[in-house]
Length: 329
Ligand code: ATP
Image (cartoon, rainbow, N blue to C red):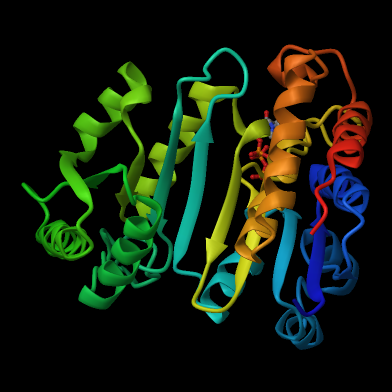
């Protein structure tokens, strides 16, 4: 396997703390990976007037993928979200969010597959004096590729197709395409209206396995699902395209706790595990995940999930376990 090269974006706020924790764990694996730090985000914008430059993009293009912390998006119309631009530029169409219980909720283990490029976030909006029209775009191609991705994760599992096709014609197309793709891939499927899905995920999360949905529904249901397993501090995500990917904790820059050394590094460390798996390093990815579960089971956790440890203490403990169990590739 050729040497992997990753861009490392710490970003703003707790992004710096959790990415430094994830890099400590990566170092414990002693892999031959080149890491290229890239500064983008609100801090850079305040300092230089630009949140991200073309040179930053050139670095991203020269790497296999991005390991991303978090960026503050201020309520300033002049500021353009860098993450949205990266997702667009690399066409990262699949947002994958595993929802796996790590504390008292071990029965919960499902994956949310969210379409990441269209739907309510297509960016087509018309602002009139007394009304605003936001256009929801659902295409056959967009639905087809997200359905294919969901089916690739659902082999031997049940795929839940979430929609609101009884009301929205755009959802009717999404539903139809997902069903076709599931049948073609011989994946067992069911369908569920989004309101009913929200209710049933809260009531009975352990019945779900792989859940596919459009952009806005996925945004809402994944944060809701995160609350079932300990909150944003433990939820990892991947933004996947045909030949590029970005891995990031689901949480933002958490300015309320930034700089205090208490941010939970688990979401960032599990995002690192997703990155290793995406690149084909399955053994190393499993070693990182197992180390996280082991350390949590010993009660070494940050305050957001009931512990008393610092970010650094949790990262040190996970790195130590990884260092002992490092698989030989
Ligand atoms: P942003 O503007 O960057 O989105 P935010 O505070 O609006 O920041 P989040 O960063 O997602 O949104 O934080 C939401 C809540 O979750 C905050 O109370 C924050 O302290 C908490 N939180 C987020 N990440 C972590 C973490 N890694 N560990 C502990 N708590 C966290």
